[in-house]
Image 1 (cartoon, rainbow, N blue to C red):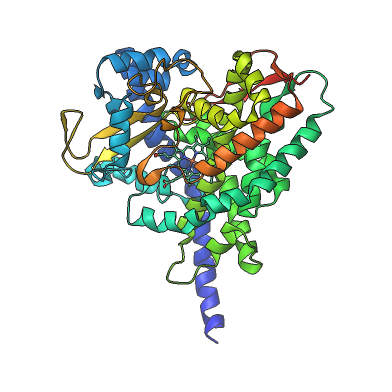
Image 2 (image 1 turned 180 degrees about the horizontal axis):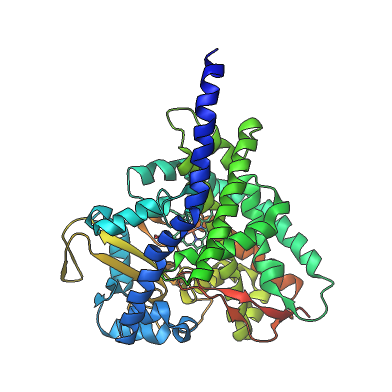
Length: 453
Ligand code: HEM
């Protein structure tokens, strides 16, 4: 009875709500792009013209491929340098201190922003366009929410769980290499191998159909750009299309797994008991982050490794002769050519850092890629040496409570994937100019032409 009475009342309003959402979508997109990208771009470009080094790092395409000289100029100015983006550090010790300190958090306090910015962020807020660096992604939320999300996922990435994935990772790597066998001339190693391995592995762990992997790669590649500030409109629109497609896929995936849960992590997340259950938005944010972080970073590690080892052929030969060296080689690649170049934290209280008073609310940018070349920690830091004893002291996986959940898995994929590649194609050579991805936060190759034999 009640349903028949209510149906005519609710149906049109739901329809109107949906219609309003569709009509407002372009306006929301424009506001979102304006506040998150257009304004920061104007601000950063102006700062870059004034010579601000961090702004140049983020905006100057000529610095993107080789940021090391800019890092060194910043290092000369001390461990904590005031810039247009607040404070910035290239120091390993300072970065580590900030990452481990409870006085710094990842969230920023929106209440201190001007009213129109708060309005724009509220108006532009839309689940289906939310990226991995926006709340409630665990990357950008502080405890207690962070603790809650992290506890739910970390069980699937314990050392034991990761070790249990090894046969699966090995099988996927070997299958991909089998498919590469007939390749005669130049092959793009990113498209054919480095991108495929991580996406197939994470798809297996998250129970998503591997037939969709080309879709994920396309959506993920577009969406990865949202980690960088100041995207031009056309790139932002393409990133947003990727995000919307990913959210739409996830919605269907959650529904399927609620009906027929499997043994995977996402099945567990969608069937949690009521007192632990994630909201729809939290579920989207958590799984989107796992999926995206699962393949958008490890692809860079694999590609960067192949390019470095090609340039240091004696070390490639050394690893072929002694495969026990692969774990050390992977750490050295992570250190020297870090796939995630930077992150940031905000002071939650007035603190003292590197002898400087840092007021609450100050943003500190941590140049992880530069900290990993800090001469105070790494002797001859620009030298690639797969036998470097302390390579593993790098901060490529960050530190403190946000230390990469998937670090063990990424290491496993890289060791298994690179060793299998080298053993199958010991004469592999880079043949042509590798093309870097047009990204600042992530660092890797878009295209990597190789000959296999
Ligand atoms: C070479 C590969 C990888 C690199 C370099 C990398 C790097 C990072 C870094 C630097 C952070 C922390 C950022 C910060 O402190 O602000 C992070 C967090 C995270 N990573 Fe990775 N990652 C890699 C692979 C993976 C994989 C394979 C997964 C898949 C499960 C993953 C899942 C995550 C998650 C869920 C977080 C958020 C952790 C938290 O906020 O508590 N990552 N990663």
